[in-house]
Image (cartoon, rainbow, N blue to C red; front, side):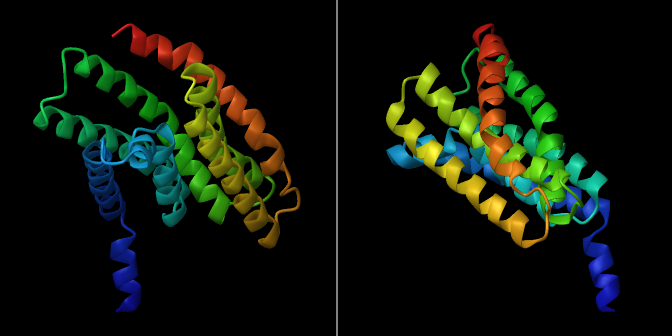
Amino acid sequence: MAIATVSRRDTPVTVLTATAAFGLLLGWATYGLHGTTPLLERATNSVSTWIIWTAAAGALIRARQLAVWAGALMMLATCGGYYAASMLGDTFGSAGLGTAAVWSVAGLAGGPLLGWAGWTVRRGRGDVRAVAGAAIAMVVLGEALWLGLALHYWGEAVVFLAVGALLTALLTVYLARTGVHRYWLCAVLAPVGGLAFYLAEQAILDGLLGSV
C-alpha cells in the first residue's frame, strides 16, 4: 500500500500539477510582497527568487526528465501568477503584455536548466554535479553584479553577493560531503558563470525589456 501511494505521488500529472500550483502561488506572493519592506521588496523583485525555488523543485523530483519539464512549467506558472496579480492590482500597464512575454520566454529558457541543475546536484553522478551547483549559484552572483554595475544599487548588490557566496560555499561543502571528486569546480565556476549571467542579462534581457 505504501509503495502504491508513493507511486501515485510521483506520477507526472501529480508532479506537474503541484509544480504549477506552487509556481502560481510564488508569483502571486512575490507581487503581493512588493512595497512591504525594503528587504522584501528587493528579495521578491528578483530573478534569483524564482530561479532558486525552481532549482529546489528540481531537487525534489525523482525523474530527471520530469524535473526539466517541471522547471519550465514552474517558471511559466510563476510569471502567470505574478502578472495575474498585477492585473487584479491594476498595475499591469500598457507594456505589461510585452514584459510578461519577455519574462515567459526567459523562463522557458532558464527553467529547464535550473530544474535539471537542482535534480543533478541531489541525484546526479560524477563531476557534472559540481557544474550544476555552479549553475544555481551563478544566478545570485550575476544578479549581484547587475544590481551594482547596471542599477547602482550597491547596498542590495553587497547583500546578493554575500548570499551568492554563502550559497556557493554551502553547495560546495554538500558536494564534497556526498563524494563528488571535483567538488571544487562549483566554487570555481560559480563566479565565472555569474559574470556570464550578468553580461547575458545586460546584453539580451535588458534589450528586450527596453523594446516593449
